Length: 117
Image 1 (cartoon, helix red, strand yellow):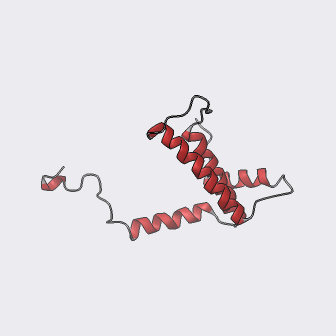
Image 2 (tube, rainbow, N blue to C red):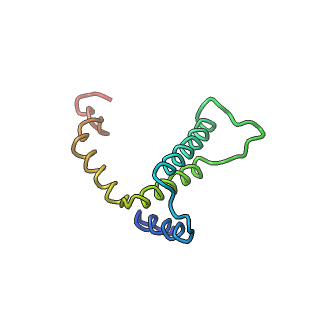
Image 3 (cartoon, rainbow, N blue to C red):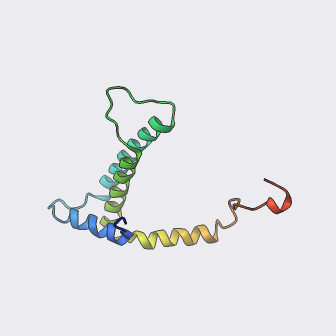
């Protein structure tokens, strides 16, 4: 069985890691730059795996999973630096999707009773 961690566990783990350094968290603007940089790296990997741009033979093999992990780390750092509880933020977003956007998408099974696929 894998070690299950809550979002709060992840935020605490990252905070414990960052807290051991005098520099601490970067400023919000620097965090935004780091997140943008990591997003670019993720986009490059996705393009290599699923797009029309194969890797050059000289390029190091990296995984989409690794890049998503980097994005998650920077996102958690960003949230921690601003005192944002990501569980609360997630809950608010899900409430929004389940209320405002509840009829926006076609649910699985809809339309089948009317002879549609």
